[in-house]
Image (cartoon, rainbow, N blue to C red; front, side, top):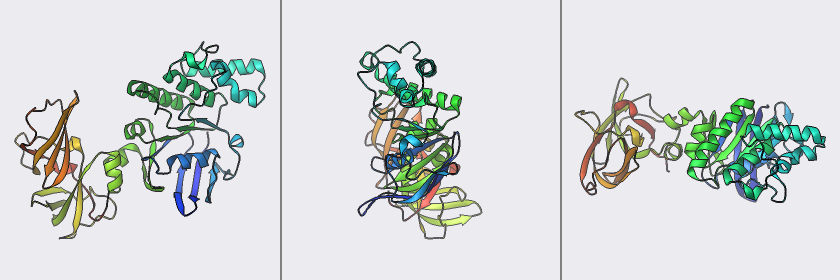
Length: 362
């Protein structure tokens, strides 16, 4: 295990900053995820931690040892790539043993360590099989065993589940998390999948266009996004424009474009939000927090149904509210097949309202 400390890291290609001022501390034994859309700089950041690329400025430390320009083979890391990078001409056992052979570990000990590593990923007895004889999910586990067999201080995973189908992704991410907890190894994980990041991470660093947007535990970034990008990326919030009408104690009253008045709690706001009368704000609403009124009269919103879909566990609606889209998810609800184009009234509990700065762009 080791701490990973990034001090004001920047990576530039000419005038383009792929990563700008990455400054964070990953704790020993932590499962830390770099999350963001394609091209946000997360893989570039991982490659600098691995030593495959060097920063333009800033420093990288593993514990108190600077590794900024150290070669990958001197960093005590194990890495699992997106395409697994297995050698097709070698057996499973030979693939897993590759790192040990490079380190000149004697044959008897290699075989013992390979057997142990394959047992950890539930592939005991697969040593003599070829890569083409096993499934994609099993290949992913072989790549994981190869990374773990050298007993690295830090495990790096770059989109390791992207080539698997949905069922295998769920099973394999659970397996990765189980192993990480069992081995208590510092793990840095790259993904663009929000659900995947939420399921496995101790903390998540969300990136956009090379810049850090928010760093926190999954529940923090989900329930308290710091800006509009995070809200729409991690929580699938709907963001509606509004104007502050009044503040009475902890209760904030706002008005949407069509005059609809809604109330929320002053404490439920992102950094920098001000509630001065007449100020523009944005109200962020998670789909699962939009409810059917069932007799309640607080925060009623009227909208026209644009689209609905049934997922089995829930029904997802897209409503038009004063020219702005609003997403709503109702659990254990069968949608009305003729709902498209009809008006519907929904409500949002006061404590579920969340406020963002009014001048933020998506």
